[in-house]
Length: 502
Ligand code: AMP
Ligand code: ZN
Image (cartoon, rainbow, N blue to C red):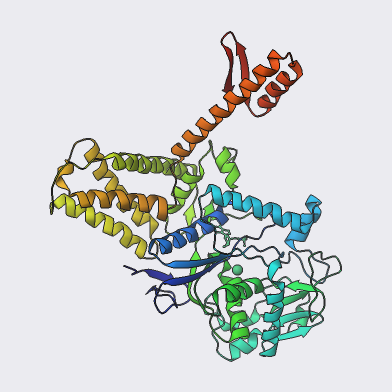
């Protein structure tokens, strides 16, 4: 039942998955979350949807999953520490004239809203970096005590050379050669001369006088280095070694390579059994990225306001579009692809509606069609077992859609399959599209919200009628004007008032 293969980016091979739990029941999964100093773009969303599918499929396979996805609310360095550089969150706070924590709250709320629109399941724990400063300081102390860290002028650096010389596999995850690593500098600190070697990286950074987010530490006031929070929080909630660690491909180096280094330095063990990396969403032939100005925001796509699209596409259309590529392949977003996804999603939902209404009418067993339908269902789940191959699983589902249509058009008789197979078809189809793929039937959602709007409008019209009967014209006009601002027009006629959406 639990056979599942996962491509491990550390060993670079597809391997059978089994959890650390001796009974193979519990799974610990950590996914790097967003840095909340601005809105997430569709590229970020792709990575979170990819790991939502992994989470959902593990749950479907009856694993008990502790899914930890952090919120990075301590800004990474934008410039250099020495010249009073600001973190991204500090910078944004000054720009928007808000407290850094207001920035963090604002963009965390927006992130959660988008995740909800995309129907991603919330993680079991969503720890924040600022909520785990104590744990991070403890980890720095441990790294120093073990000889892998050194302090210089209030900052603490990780000694990569020691790890390399001890042959502890620094560079294995990212596939970097030791020589390249030794010559590479990978943070923006101006004080490179504080480091004993260019490849060393900061695990604690001395705060410049203007730096807003700062905490006291044994090394003076400062803030944790870029990679430390994920090491500290994954260890705290999942243990020193846990099952799955995910994130976008662009985090392999330096972020994940340095996470491994920190864990090795602090605990002496490899933190992760299966490293998983999602590939990039591409726009105009380049990785989608905010800093390059090459991006689409989810709200633009959903409202139809993106200059790159001629109309709006719904959250589920976006989700379906993402399912059409394997998480390890790049995915290119175009209007044509979104149109195709819209049609595909509609076909899938229509087929499901038809299927759930089919009534069993025969007694057949062991027919070719019966075997065929069962084997397509097996194949669909088999594709998911093969490193979460959503495009192939979708292709199998569309094989079932053709069979469902033939039943519906009476091109083939339901007599040809057994009742057990029809029930399995109904259950598996629903399980795949709703539970595993996380799609929702948006027409159903729209129907119920239209009903609710209608009910609310009747109520408002009634209140306005009462105001008019009491000759309270000011109130009656206020209701009319406020509704107009919301895009709803009230018209008074002989039969009473009616309303229309503008
Ligand atoms: P950040 O907030 O920049 O740390 O990014 C959050 C997540 O989005 C990380 O896992 C990144 O790897 C991922 N990410 C960033 N850009 C893209 C992209 N164009 N396509 C897919 N994932 C991305
Ligand atoms: Zn991380």
